[in-house]
Length: 544
Image 1 (tube, helix red, strand yellow):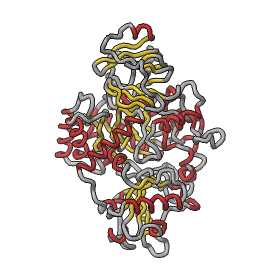
Image 2 (cartoon, rainbow, N blue to C red; image 1 turned 135 degrees about the vertical axis):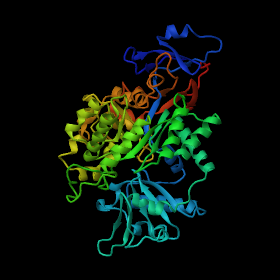
Image 3 (cartoon, rainbow, N blue to C red; image 1 turned 30 degrees about the vertical axis):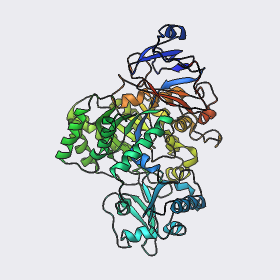
Image 4 (cartoon, one colour; image 1 turned 90 degrees about the vertical axis):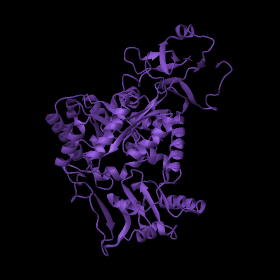
């Protein structure tokens, strides 16, 4: 039992209670403290929240969990917002890992280079020249390589890119500068030694431990393949899976019938499993705004000759989406630019016309810019708006804002407008394509649209911020709705799975700009306490 706190249930019929009783991994009863404590028996463990806030467990509805977990042991450039700071971290990592034939990692931000320029191979050569280095931007869409890595890959002025991507070149010589956009990064990435299965499993365990400390009890993996799914199966079979995982398989530009058949078999095998599911597929419609690869309706403000290019021809997208829809898969589509969003909505409309009306809960991921005429189409088509508040952190959007320009800026990360128009708003981190996986940082952005120190004055596109309750809903029961699991999780109500989180501060009562100071102090998963902060919420003698 959890008693003596303020418990936000997420249930409109009874949004606030004082206590909750848990039995058999499910919520048994909610209500006032006196009524719940009357149920105490000799085997009951009672935890006094001492006035703290409890909510349903956090559901990160768009994450690349294996990549993020593997990155915990790689170069981390998150928050290093100067060239010298980045070079310092890279050099230190190289010194501490002399046994590694490659240096790789991620986390650099576009806005952190002098004059807003892109990084160069020379920037890396200055600190590591004896081994190949390859570092991805925080969004995962752009890579940065040193000369040794470029040479190892055999990339020259004559090298061409197949598909959706670009090698950034010196305008005078045509030689690669060291930056590789989108699929061009595979020219180097394919050479990096792949982790072993044992290393992947160890990384997932490390990632689950981090998720537990952050109050994340469910994830929806927005990419992956059968081999990655089998890692979660192995953890499940070993009794080690302390996270509810729903997998979306990556489609790319094509998928054969044999692969679809295997995906269908996994989907059906785990259709009703409370810990592991495989019911979705993921498309990529465009890139990202910072590198001008997102598909826009009008040219970029700082690159008037470009509107970006869709990653997938519309007819091919609509055909594949309809085929996978007929096999019972939910469709995720990455679409960041307003043209990418419109094409995706058009594709979903075509799927409905071909296959008939159904409760598809098709999703668009990211939606960083959307044209006003397309906002009401989300609710009309039943399309979910799956978005990441962390991507709108005002401290990271200088390059983004310059590319979008002032006319489109009011529609930046339009959480409020989409929600007000009736769309289901679903929140997540996109980790590791994010500056933080911590839901608290996302909640802070969603509610404030300001940096942690309160700047810029007035907030960044403050009209698009949402309330604490809206943000928590988007991180809990709307996430459950997004994976067709709202009947089993996402709220604290009798019969639901007992996944809860307790915070160090009451998010509803503190000043909004103090949200980022909040920490998770208790995580309950499947009715078991799996994390407790020993400093902020030490066990008391009365907790029995």
